[in-house]
Length: 88
Image (cartoon, rainbow, N blue to C red; front, side, top):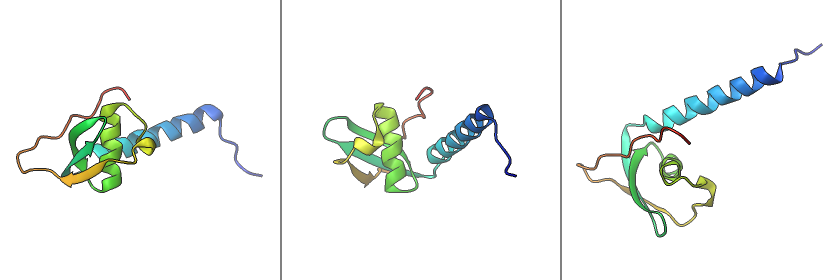
């Protein structure tokens, strides 16, 4: 009755969706400064505070869900955002 999807095809679809989401987060037009007491400060692309924290966590190589005490601020006009990490 229902269409069965091959597990390998399902994995490929989910991986592609995650990659598109990541590329969308990193191509946001805004810039934000994310400040964390342990990891420091980083300027990242910003379309919302959540995406700024997710991008900062990727730069810091930690889980974004564990960052509860970070602050997101407007970046200064001359601030250059961090590059998207090649390997997650």
